[in-house]
Length: 195
Image (tube, rainbow, N blue to C red):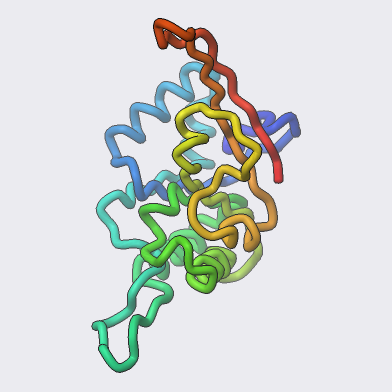
């Protein structure tokens, strides 16, 4: 998108994108980005103008427990200080898309508690403080799907609210076929389902 390349078989125009990486650090991100730019033949100057990559691997989750724990009041969950800093960066850079990588490092609630998941997704809708933009949250799939077993389920672990609270969902699943006796990988393919 930062290069104006086709995305999911749709034409795009060069747009600003902010990538918030809570999982991978600066060195890995830089190597990965360099390989992508070189392999795709993108203009490095255009990518530098349109893509802001944030190394958030050492930061606190965007959503989680606020203040000190009180036994009488229970846990109070909500926006954390790093979400406010993210909003400030988004307001300044003004991207059309923010990618949050990923839920396991930015959501510090109970993944099977519908209210907590719904509150986190609603929080992400306010990533840009002044206007509506696209937000892509990366969430790991369930173990069976991750191991390459094609299933008829929806691939997510935890509450169905991860699916229900979002406007759209892309589900990537890798099918791995193994030879019966040797357990060698015979073929791999990627399946994309839009839900």
